[in-house]
Amino acid sequence: MSAVPDRPPAACVLGRAGDDRVAMVEVDHAGAVIGRTDIAEVELPERVRDLEERGRSTRIPPPRWVFSDTPKWYPPLLAAGVRIERCHDLRLARAILARSELVTEPGEIRAAAQWEAGPTAAAGVDAPVALFEVAEGRGYVRQVPHGIDEALAEYERQNRAQAGASDPGRLRLLLAAESAGGLVAAEMQAAGVPWDVAEHERILTDILGPRPIGDGKPAKMLAVAEEVRAALGDPRANLDSPVRLLQALRNAGINVASTSKWELETSEHPAVEPLLRYKKQARLLSANGWHWLDEWVEQGRYRPVYVPGGVVTGRWAASGGGALQIPRQLRPALRADPGWRLISADVAQLEPRALAAMSGDRAMAEAGRGRDLYSGLVDAGVVATRQEAKIAVLGAMYGSTTGEAGALVPRLRTSFPAAMHLVDTAAEVGVQGGVVSTWLGRTSPAPGQRWLEVQKAANQFDATAADENRARRAAGDQGRFTRNFVVQGTAAEWALAWLADLRLRLARLPEAGENLAGDGNPVEGEGSAAASGPVFSRRAHLVFFLHDEVIVHAPAEHAEAAADAIRESAASAGRLLFGDAPVDFPLDLAISERAVKD
Image (cartoon, rainbow, N blue to C red; front, side, top):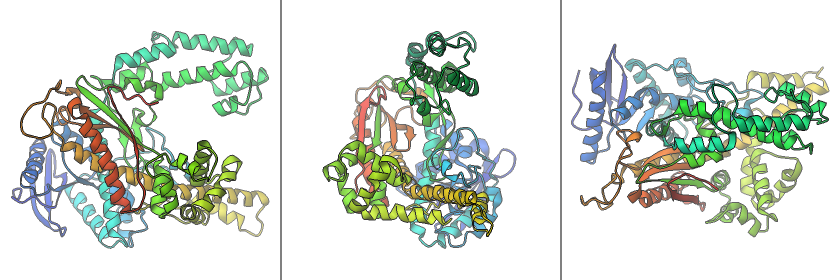
């Protein structure tokens, strides 16, 4: 057993070494073990703090901490007031390496099945569904090994896979960004979103009525339900059972195939408008009502559970709290602490800009330079209106071939041939059952066994027309999946790079009460955001992320500096991924006490 070396190692692998014991194994830049220290688990935060602070004080980068799974190791450190600069998450990295086309010899990684811990939904005929969201709270397994021997063996496997990759630089960047995302997710859960419970309750009362006793429905919701029943002429209509509601609608002459909003809006029956109001009220009550407040908001903080890489494209999912689905009417409940501000920023048309950058389509890049990209298409004469531009671009990325999108997409092929060639080629690969990769090397899942069987059945000598139609539909679905995978996945990589750079910039800002010059002279402010925890109670920090949007909580005196950090990190992410590509990523940014979006 050795002491922690004077010079911080390149990496430090953590793993369990028995009951209440943790091993810290130091690794040099060549991947060789240079020391090991076994300590009591309660001593870990202080040892980590020592290495982090020693590295910063000597201007030698602190080690990259190697975690079996960030949610296992990082929260206890944050609770003890310890923040780390960088890590390598073995679970997140393994999910990428086991599938990536850039890994030339993936067999060793794939053989370590004990590290297979991620979304469990298999890719098959229905694979495109997983492109958008994985259902919250389902399909995640976190039972990866946490022992030091298993962690060291996996780290060595992953290092070999990266070293032998066809483009190791891109892959290293992806793994670093993915691991940084794991740190951000843990930090945002620890800090929480500043939440105004009184405002949330006011919104609920305004929309639903006063909080009911027990599990009953609030008064305004009951009143709307009676409006619906009166319009249907059915005083006993069950509005909460889709099957019974559908029957009641048909009995009233509303001939719809389902109770979805889109179906109902096709009817002009007087019951439709109050029914849609009732459905909105029911969703709010169920997803974010008083029970949600009781469960998820405590001491002025909402702490959802994020799942980095929870969607196959690299987008995040959530396994609790509904962070990805906060309804717009609740945005006023996001409120900064006294003397603090919320800085909200989102990227305009992130995915089309990522497509322009990765395809090298200069005309598409120019259409969005420094402005709204959709308006740029109108100014360039590609389409007549901004709405047409949006329909055309989304149609191109998602493979729409019918309706208004089908009519508009051909104009993009004329105006932006490089961008369209990229997504068209990706779609062709999917139709043939192949896989595609993002800019940094995240690779799409191969079609599942069911998909293969459907295609095989269509090629049999006795195949029916139904077999052929089924195979054609499945192939088309897979083509649309791969078409969007490369774009959505690359946009997710840009967002991860944005987050990774931003968290480091925010960490370098002064604490509340300190000035930006760092000369010790205090500035006016109202002090601590104590509910954000020991790491973030006095400095700017990320509190929310959703695909192309971030919210930072910062002392009021440093809000402008935090806003600059957000802008600078967005520009840096573009340069890091795409070099000097003529694509910018403009932000819609606001500083306020409440995170209210128009």
